[in-house]
Image 1 (spheres, rainbow, N blue to C red):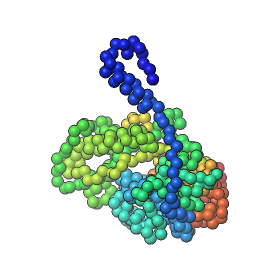
Image 2: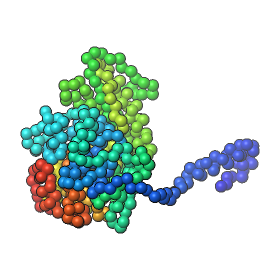
Image 3: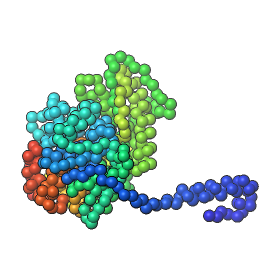
Image 4: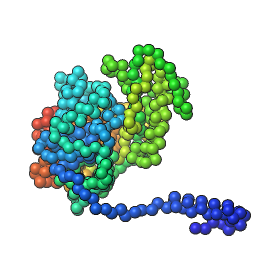
Length: 450
């Protein structure tokens, strides 16, 4: 460490010492040290299949695997299942044109009034995140799935091309969970990335991802409420002042509950600084938007619930055996190894911070099994929004009903790999489709490989 002698000679002794300390501190901050952290980790439990992440994909994967007679452990980092549907208060199912399988079963059991007669129908039911949370708890007990809450993935243990265990941080410290098959439903592909699976993030040209949103609800009280704007919040005068530059909310039930999706914070939800900023900035926007709405048509509505955490639309996509593309989506491509079908629109909230959204309707397309299969690991599947897909394609397939479908297929595929003693990439598609049919999954049509 050194600094210019001319500067040093002009400073009193105490200022020289302060300056020297500052230089050392700045140098220390600029040099990121690495550590070799080794520890003997006790195995907490072992199963046929371990699912990491209890969102839509994870819950469906766990249910479908357990129904086929396998011991399943589901690891969830929070205290509740449901992912963004409960934790993030994204309590509305987007229309995908195929109400089938476990997703249809959930609708029948929780939202029966929305259940369509035929599977090839689009519905967009608004639901209670609290009721869904309770439903999933009870569902897992009935299905025989062992759920371990407050357990966050830390790392993988590999033997060649196979995973032997995952390490997780629990209330009792670091523990290992062993299995024969693993399903990554973290939403960020964290298990896959740690196991050495290549990935992409965001747009090809600059890596920017879709922005984050903190959802909230307002309750119609039936009488005027006094708008309150907390200190440092924004005063939104007109629609164009709002973070998204538009109104986006739903009130589809008869309980006076307004679900609001109007905040927007630029950043990547898998980055420490970005997510930290988003949590505070999005909450500031929530109170600002509430104040705006109470002055513009919702004078009798009070803030009733703010999501536990900011909602993340996009982070990492694995590179699988096949990558779903924009062309697949817009051209409505069909695949022989289809595991999910959707006609949800291309829906890209502007990654660069602009108040725009790229929305393009699509006629419907298949998502092939290969999108969930990483080439590098023989006993790992990835289900949910972090499958192998481009930025544009992911914007269409990321919604909850599609994630339930992907999870259901992943759970069945993992059991087939166990029963047939094969690597995950060699799972019989005929057997997978038969397993899906047995669990009431209906596809529009099957096609030959494209």
